[in-house]
Image (cartoon, rainbow, N blue to C red):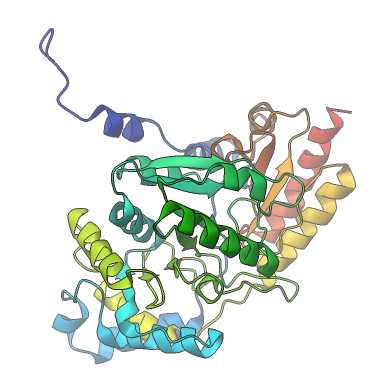
Length: 401
């Protein structure tokens, strides 16, 4: 570079591109260590990559579509919101499950939940817009909001239940609040917001919307909706609060994280729903979203009714929870998703994570989730690795005795 010449790139984008998430960093470190000490000697709980295979119907649908349908149509462009037949299949499934009246025209298909969230945030990001979320929260909410015209406001966690501290939330709602982002079942805690929590949230947002003179939308980020244990229930949020926009992904429910397929749902009942939907379409256009993968849309049309087999995840969750709590760890009881959120011995999750890393036990510190006292364990791993890792967990906590 010439001396004195200015760097002609966005400094904000440069920072994002040169600072990896702690999750990805740990995951890549694990791959490097496996090459050095052997995969069997690395206990990688870093990344939420589904370990349960996709349902056989999904693989069969791909085979049938590729071998029986017209190749040009399979691999061609689709309408930006997705094929109408795909949207009809998903609307029918939602209506049968939740007693709603979702129309195909309420659904906008995307390349997974991330561009869905970005499109919704960008669509709602008026001048001085604030987006509120509740800790612990998904780490990417900050760049999603701050790089698309908004300010992220974080509500401190309710450390006892990981539900919502409503006094803390109310203090952060004001005339600039465009939306509240919730994630239930939650990444990283695995906790599901109860029906009572959501009803109280709906009452608060209804009241604060009146005070603000405009709707405060609820963005329901739901990639883990189908991963529920012990007869737990994930309420369909639009049936509780009308101004809800749902962002969904099939990454977890159908074990398709690398295929990138999901949708946005803007029900008719939401305030200004037509304008919101059109703004989402405009936002998707602005970020270069042409259409989601044609092949995967057709797979979803055939498989929208399928639910995951979560038996392996449940066994992993139960084994880890019972073992860790018996060793003396304090942990929220996860009844959804595939994570455990554990209180770090010594009080600092970064310090504890570094100590674990020295033993090739890879766990994610909770700082970027908004809870630096906790660390996240991803339970979508092999059962054998869990069993081999338990002595390491036990030895670690004994160092703090």
